[in-house]
Length: 297
View 1 (cartoon, rainbow, N blue to C red):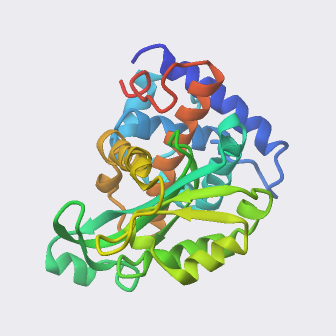
View 2 (spheres, rainbow, N blue to C red):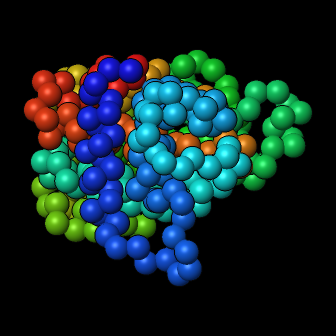
């Protein structure tokens, strides 16, 4: 392991510990604190160790004495799933702690999160009722699972996200996400959201316009192109690059989750790792904001 990874983990642990503040739980404090748990979760994703049991065996060798106590695989898994709301809040806290948070441009898209392949697995899966079959034209394949709807800045910083049934309309999901957290657009008049053709909708245009948000997306081939539409393609490629980072370097589709809580926390774990890397790169003046090269070995 190279030196920058401990540097990131140390800075992240201090940030989380300060952010959480004093211990407020009733009863005895856990032997593994929430700050340690979340730092472990980020390190696991950045180093690409998908097996929790193997990760807990690996930590004492890779980070000797960094974590005085490590739970067993079952205890780590339960703590991590229970910490999903905390992980979501931490993603927002780290993102808001960068100068990228106020960027007036957002990019949005959805990508498959496959959860099973064989028909027997889909029938007995605890994700039945949440996941479903769908077709991904970008990858020319059918899949069974969920879709990750991600809103990020052009630098790749996650702003908000949601996991949804892949058959749900992307436009309806976007409106539901913004309704769930109205503070996101409350103080962002002049915000521009860049999307693909799947977000063409007069209803969505009106919904966003009421909130002072402009939606830019390509026109269909039988429509007259809008002025400046040719400039959208390079920006649209950014979200594809972010999805590629999540899947290629952070193993998004190799999450191993078997329940909605399990998939949710593993997806959040990867978004947290991406956000933490961007936060640290920005704070330390790295030339490439979304680079994970220093952290994945």
